[in-house]
Length: 120
Image (cartoon, rainbow, N blue to C red):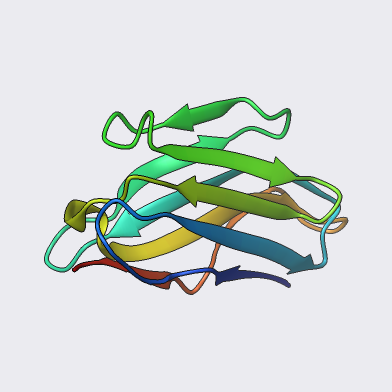
């Protein structure tokens, strides 16, 4: 089994910054793409950013120039650096990872989510 644990959410004023982290643990042979999604109240979950195992990032247009995604493969961790935060960024942020174990084909796992609130 594999677990993803997020951290770093919280309350921040508009224009502020936060860094989210997500670490995978458990029966891991290799990790492919990792990503961040978010879900605001009353809205569908949406893609924020993904990053391939080789480090190539992909960001939603709404966060380009403000958010950066990176990963540390030695620690099975993906990061989301968020700056110039806006109230519209308020949501529960979820990470995911495509994980291959020794005994199973690649499986997409999700974290439990971390709340980000942007408000004055």
